[in-house]
Image (cartoon, rainbow, N blue to C red; front, side):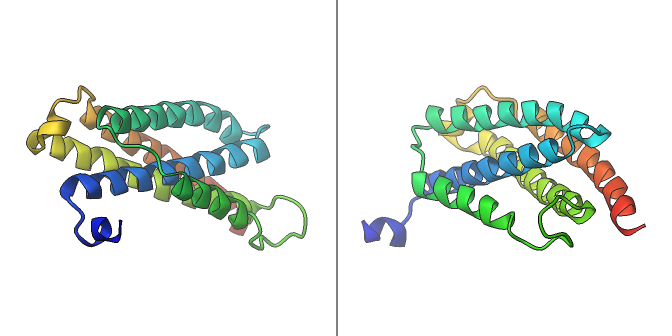
Length: 169
């Protein structure tokens, strides 16, 4: 088993890469849901309802890519992503027990980082679709997925700017 990690093939590396992104997507979705629940009554919360639905579609697409490539999940990575998201809730935010404007800023920064990573995932798969036989056979429009990630990032960045103004004046 150790030999597999010492001599990983391109297929092994792709499986690791996709499983890492799947774990990150799980954590990002949890952050988006937490942020939406904490902002349910404002403009950000209303926006996040639609974003979460599109993130869920992206996650299902990533799962389909993995399935089509015969890549199985990694429950350890998924568990670690869930644990990391929950531990992240314990950070200080300027208040002992309630949500604060700083919480909103940090959650949106995490979403921006995750969305940017997802955009790079789709760009990478789009490039591989041109050169790698197994991915060439996939019928996903990775360019459109990358474009949607760019749109999401721009929208969340706009909400982040509002959150920064609200938190820091």
